[in-house]
Length: 569
Ligand code: FES
Ligand code: MG
Image (cartoon, rainbow, N blue to C red; front, side, top):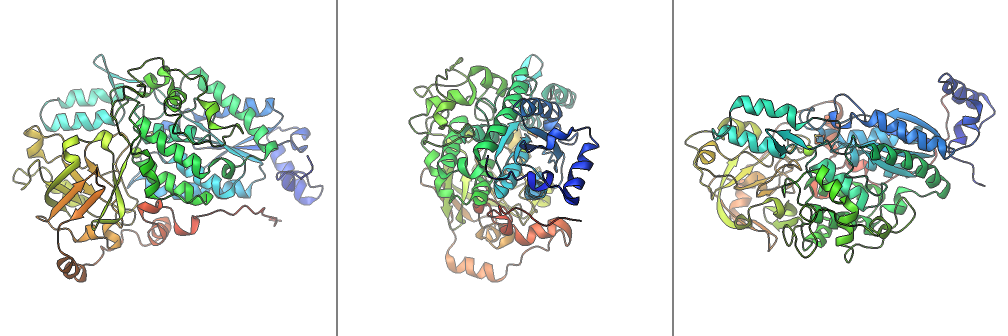
């Protein structure tokens, strides 16, 4: 190879700096030949005991190392911030961009030639890809993989999805608190991510459909020995990718993002994919907008997994996983490069469906048109989204009266009041839960059904907010309203009793209040005081972009691929 490897700017120098870089590394027992110019592969690990979904990544890193050594590379594992979706307050999403900064600066500052990204839990996958894309060294993903199917009282139960269901049943008096507590240990019984088609498995599926991981990466259970083998093969492949100089910008093209959008529709993926794909596209300079998500609108829902269907990720894996899905929608899939250096069609060549109730053939979908719908109107001039596959059909075309919660505290204090003036036709509106408002855009958009209606048997209503919702959640939930209330969007002006019109087929979200009245309300409006006045959260508040731009920080959009030449000593 003629060009000097990036890592040789650290480890190939015969001076004081080279001594320092090599000598300190040798305290770990690495021999001289580890520094002889072979590719140095960073293994960027989001393992943490506070991110239980990523608890298997220590073991997988060893698998990657086997493959890197075998291919003649030198693997070095390093930790980055880890985001435990179920453990962090106010929301892991507040820190996705901080993880992305950590990943980007770690890759840039260290003497590595390529990176294997080990992630899994919701925000870890997009955070790592955003950071890696901004440095643009050869990069490839290995995901945690899903937990084994949850089990309770002889039935399969799904992460998240059944929590929302059980907690509503407890509120309705249909499930005892003892049973509710017992279900906890049955739900999460192995290493891995949520085993529903939540955000983690959605992002893993989209990463595979984009060609940023090896085929089958998304669905193999975390504890399946084949995932360890996949990690090994990934380690081998990244060494070749360094030699081929195959970078994220060569794979994460517009076509790859379109394939992710198509796959998201077919798998019934999370609404969170929208903000994550938009943010990732911003890093590689792909012009992706909400409008592009409409290409998924007519794609049928093929994967019968919770929350849109009834099975779980283990079933999805055994039924054929992402390759089988891609083979069904191959007429739509765009030609696009992958980490194999081959077209994405190689990912589904010869793929078969082994259980046609779990993965439906095109002729017999779970739902005919499943992609996310983008809604626009005076209530969301820059867009909002709804996931029809998880919604109640008749509510997708509806006009009703708003009942407004000014913030999350208002909602929590009042949602179960017996005299709350709401019916099943009311449209619940929640403000102050966007990127700036909360801050961090939490997953509270699927607000609970008012207690009095739950007792009457109501299980779904239209809910509108600037929040996100968990990828494991369901309901007729309109999300990501942009601009958000705290940024002065029309959402801030909605009052209880206003009428709202929703049409998913027409792409409409209108507040039926005339412009003069809205102007009058706007003059009297003021944003809430900021929750944080210092630290990262303050930086986030000052720089976060709205949901329709992916909620990245404005100064992180784009990339900087220059080699850092200055030394510390
Ligand atoms: Fe980590 Fe669902 S909470 S993947
Ligand atoms: Mg989540």
